[in-house]
Length: 170
Image 1 (spheres, rainbow, N blue to C red):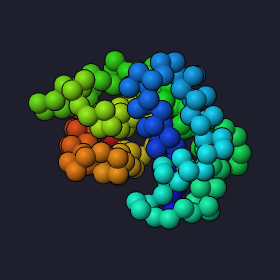
Image 2 (cartoon, rainbow, N blue to C red; image 1 turned 90 degrees about the vertical axis):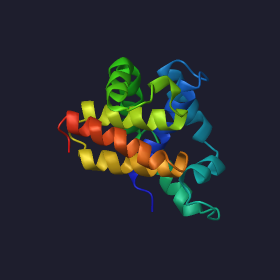
Image 3 (cartoon, one colour; image 1 turned 120 degrees about the vertical axis):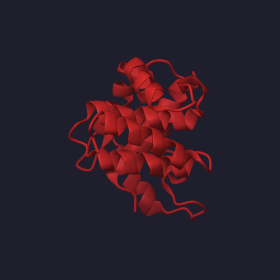
Image 4 (cartoon, rainbow, N blue to C red; image 1 turned 45 degrees about the vertical axis):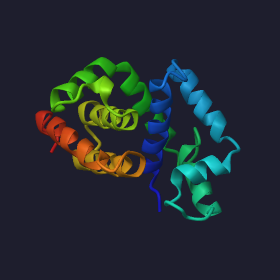
């Protein structure tokens, strides 16, 4: 079953990916666009939060929707906003951190999915001290395995491990 933080990280990844692809440039616009897209589209939520090849699960979709509502007792939307705004506000610092920790890869040449997973996790490691470093690494690796290439999990793990060591978050 999906956790609230996992749902928030996946939502933030989708938003960051759209911004990185140049589809949306403004953070507020990106957040509004994502919220509007989810407002009544259960299929999008199913595709985001279902296990691979699983049939439509109305309970899982309802749970994900509760996590991503801007308000409510189970909402994790503030975490989505913190991730998206934090990456956007600190993009240069984050990309420098990733670039220094990446062997043989320049940040702009990285796969867009991997790059945005790395940005999100590097932001958490550098600017969200209340989030356990190990949780950030584990979640980023899982996102990379799910949305990236066959080698994304190892790639993301290697870079984030160096970042976590440099920031003393391990």
